[in-house]
Image (cartoon, rainbow, N blue to C red; front, side, top):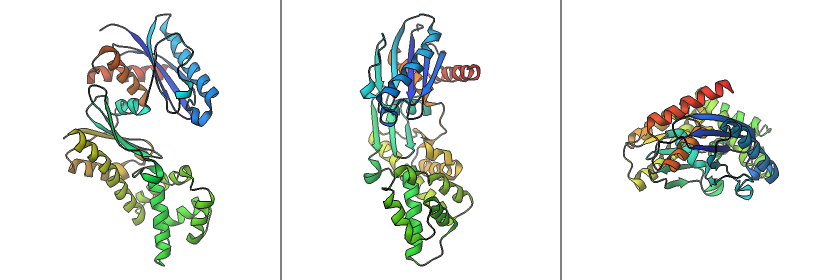
Length: 315
């Protein structure tokens, strides 16, 4: 295996990370910048942030040629390609997220942030996904869905004439109203803001940990919704025993969601596991596979991870 150099860029709405790596497991340099999702920060800022991150990482190449610049940035198509003298590729950010979570093809990653979907990659780099249809048509198991379920349960409590639970009181405070009847007006007046609804996700998790019955029920419903996404890919791709990892904001709820999810995944014959690496390292693993014609072994993937940890401590 040669020492071909390549660059990977993991970008989003608030921050961007570029990594310079070779094909033998070394991450040699790093560049950081602001957001690069043009839909969030605009085309000019996205372009400038990407260039800064790339050029800072390129500094560590010492003048050696870079074979490929691989960008994993949502909303970046209008900025692509960058004005740089090297081959460039723009890929879905689900690819580096997947390989960051599992490190190898043949598994399933559940991405549950404001939205939700499941994704799998095979050894040839082919992607298969389920879900991801947006707030109106899908996003079951997402942070938005968790918030929506909390609001619905609060309104149902009002309809049934029962006292609002602690979770319901937290929902009312979130929307700055004192009565459940004012909740609907507050939500529609804000245009059914997805981010505001999704911001209830950690609130639900908090009250689930405190034993609120409605919050605990929502965690069970969320786990079921996410397990159903995994089951679709299990059935479509015939992946018995496949590893499954949960990433995104919902995963930050911790054991209150991972425990019921693991129980359901295991019942399906799948193997729940914690995410292995960061999306930035996942991009390096994926790109190494593209350049060499075979995906890195678990040992090589772990070498990239160790190299990244060492680099970030020095950075």
